[in-house]
Length: 217
Image (cartoon, rainbow, N blue to C red; front, top):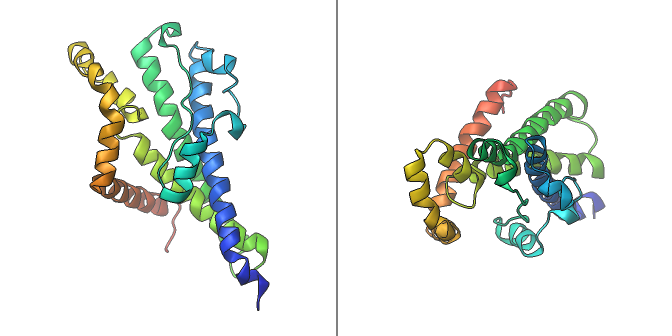
């Protein structure tokens, strides 16, 4: 028996967990970094201005991500009263999270390009197989996180960005319904609507990146 293929599934799981944990940690760190940059040090005071996953990961949310492909990290605390322009700065802090996922997608495509140049056709080792899975997950997971978090439903980041363009009278009318956001998300997941939205935009973004990096696959 070839031990390399025997351990392939285990390598795949390790790569998946590493990418998930790092991507979520980088996402939350980016929220904290943006908030601190714009004048709110609440996240820094709560030790969230770090890439240490232990400061960001939610145990139940992580388990759900691993087993059900849907989960969450602990939200970064933000005090909008510390912002000079609360709605604008809060929208920027919110966008920092999805933008971090876009950065990781770009990194994944750069790594793919490097892999093509130096490792394509190389002898398959544990490292090469791990790298294949790592790059694939880095791209696909972060594309999904980017699209998912931009959906304008509370408590997702897209909601805070969406409220920025709303007239104040509409903004104050809808904030009382924020507490129902999680229920709406679960309903859309249950009906499969959210999955269709994710697939539609993830595939389109993936194709745009293929064109950008001149990939033929």
